[in-house]
Each structure stands twice: as structure tokens, then as C-alpha cells.
Picture 1: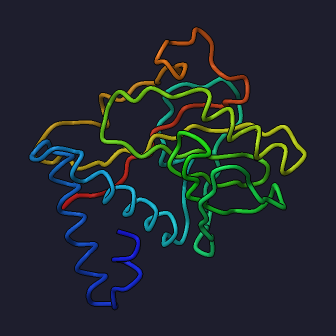
Picture 2: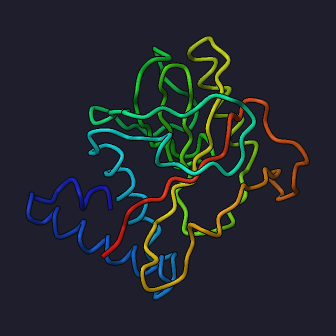
Length: 206
């Protein structure tokens, strides 16, 4: 899919996004299996976060669970962000950067960005239940903390399509998710580095 978007001209790109939006909206409503639209949802979310003039995380996100009094920020602009894939390490130089990364197998999240020493981890999903694999998130937080020589705290953000005008409601049913081991066993505690779990309703109405 990445090559498809890279080779597309302006008109083709517009058509691709329209097709993806229709596909994702149908999957969110339950009209088709979500697995056929999963990659499209990720692509649309990444483009949305990169193209928005300002990201209002505090006023847009819904809190699923809070462990700290810190608030996510509004007015973020990550249009100039760069993406990379890595399996083993992170190359970060500043805790104040606003950047978004596709991180492959480094952790079990789809992307993250940093702002002013806070890590925002994004998990794109169609599911109202999506357990969090603790080992992957822990690797990400430790790698980023080591690269910046600071102890990072993080928000875990579920990005869920809000496309329920004529179908099932995913957004309203979402609740805080449990952390699990690599074998799927539920952990009784949450990571101390987690500030909160948030829900970001991704606008996808068609």
C-alpha cells in the first residue's frame, strides 16, 4: 500500500483516499469484515495526523482511565513529521520534538509522537476490546527514555473510527483496556509510566 500511495499523482491520491474512507466506514458500521480495511484505516489515520493544522488532544480525546493529573495538550502541529521503521532502536535527539514514527516491530503500537517530554502512543483499531501487550509498550518507553536520557511518561491512545451514523456504535462502548503478557495473561497493575488511556474518535463519516 505504501508504494501505491507513493506512486499516485494528485488525482489518483484523492481517489485512493476516497476509496479507503468508504472501505473503512463500511467496516466500522459492520457492513464488511474489519480485516479487509485494517491497513486502510492505519493509512488514513497517519495521513490525518500529519495533515491536520492542529491536533487538539485534550479537547478531542475521551479519558478511559487516568493515573495522573497531567493533561494532553491542544494545538499540536506535526505536519513536518518524518516516519521511519526500525526493529531494534530509536534515534531521538530532543524531548521537545513533535514527530510521528511508524515503528514496525519495536513495540505493539502503530505509531507514536513526542511532545515536550511526553510520549503519545497510538493504537489504531476497529475493536471495542483491544488488550495491550505490556512487553511491547515497555520496550518502546524504555528505548525512547534511554535515547533521550529522561524517564518518559506516556499516554496510550486508542484511535477508533467514528462511523456509526447508520450502524453499530464502537466509540460509546470503548473502555479502558487491560495490559497482558505475551501469552495473553492479564496483569493486575498498570505501568507506572502511563499517564492515562485515551480514546481518539477518528472522523470517517461518508
